[in-house]
Length: 193
Image (cartoon, rainbow, N blue to C red; front, side):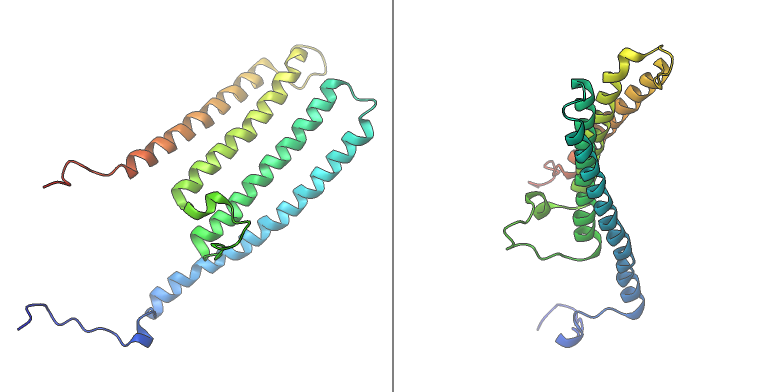
């Protein structure tokens, strides 16, 4: 005689179905689809901006100073990093929160996508934001020689706040990574009892 409780099992055709309210709640994830499609449009706008800045660099290559070329190149790198951030949010966010992309056998599947989850996505986004902030801070430091000159848009207070905000981004990313690490550490104290 079996001591287990009789738990009714649903027929196989109903096993994957949800009740109406849970089905509605679960289906609401598709409301994010227009958001991701909008980010793809924003990605296209960044491609146009990149091409415009690249054309500007090519046309001015013979007349620009080294500093001007460096600033345009930093602008190009900034656009690329923001574009990378968009891709991480579009692909990683869709995969994590909406639906599987089923890229397992695709030769171009990004390496990071195979182990993406909300925690990994947060850390990757934090690192991308630090990279973008670093480019802006480097651009500010290039212009730092103009501090105090008439017509300069930089002020000592502005540079200081930009550096402080960048440092806060770095500390925030380290904090997020640390919290994620301690949250994933297995509890070994009670494992051998």
